[in-house]
Image (cartoon, rainbow, N blue to C red; front, side, top):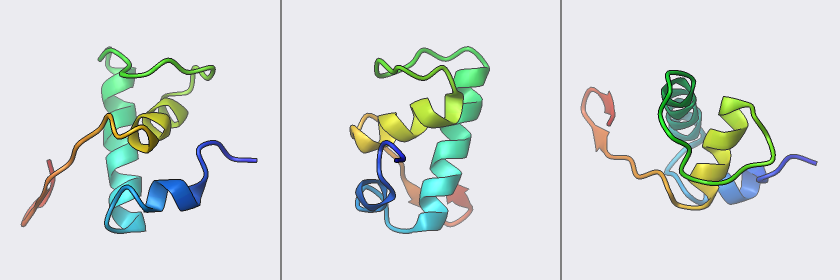
Length: 68
């Protein structure tokens, strides 16, 4: 079973595309040394990013040129 579930994650953003983009961007930040915003059992950056999104620790803003 995937944790957090896709159903939970999709309710946190406006589309699946936004979810993928946001998770990838945050995972890159974690890989580059940014601090984790939540405790995680996993050490994989994408999983950590998805958990942060599910816990509303990540805020995004939709702009004309992409996601900030």
